Length: 253
Image (cartoon, rainbow, N blue to C red):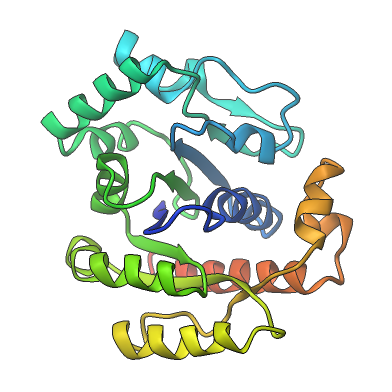
């Protein structure tokens, strides 16, 4: 299996939307996907169509007992497996972070317990870098996918962490989310980003700003189902195609 950590260096980049979309689109390409939420917002289940946010999840299981995550693994109507973060008080989240800081290989060791096909993909919805949960996700991932926005604050935040992200990743790629053709500044930011981190690191495909995304989720659907001809749907399909090709480039697939 391949492990992909999806993180960001700024808030509101759209990580969870991308993780949920990729999980569904990869599964539809006959590539089993397991999504794991390492983000205390605990909203991944909503994006995957569960009517209620689960109380139990990764953090509650980790603090109460050790062992496989079977009891806190859920499956949505499409058959997508996922592990939510779980609803936890601030003190519990802090205790979880402290435990991760004491054991840098905690996530790696637990992922080894998961029995998945060789062609499966584990998608880690990681917290904002440099949170300890993001560091653990990147440490064990075959690919770190950093989501960013095309604005000055996001560029500055990413520039502050890019060297550490690159050093900690087996392979790093950046995807820009929320690009609007109506805003020339966005393209200036893309040019600056490529100059700072290198064109090879920034994916040539990008996800455009599209009202179809929030409207679709308001109707309880993904935009590639609710508005399949929208620009965002096209972009997400392209990202899923790229990731599927990245997984398959391994001859052991």
